[in-house]
Length: 111
Image (cartoon, rainbow, N blue to C red; front, side, top):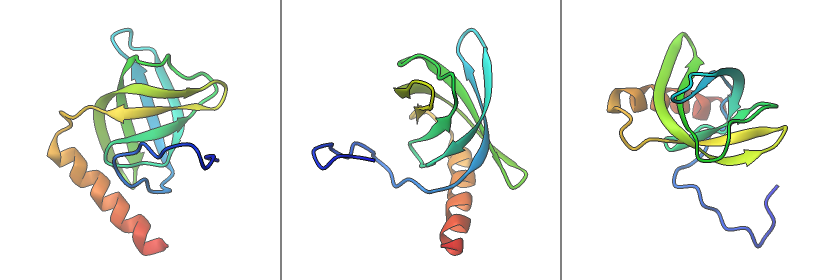
């Protein structure tokens, strides 16, 4: 939970969408499978006991409803033993954002 003094730094609205996720540290390729929550067009939060180091580059795959969103990004927040925040690269293709937008529309309809 945020304190009142903590500034909101997110650039995009996050959706409480739970998806299956896979993240691979680049360039090593060490893969983690995890659950992903709080997804937005600019990034997401991975629930994992062993987060990747802050600042490291990653390849991201989010899977939901038989579709896969794939991009690269970097670790921008680490909570040891709990998870990590990933910021997607600005070079993410528009067709990948279309997948996220479809998921977000479905999540909005449920709420």
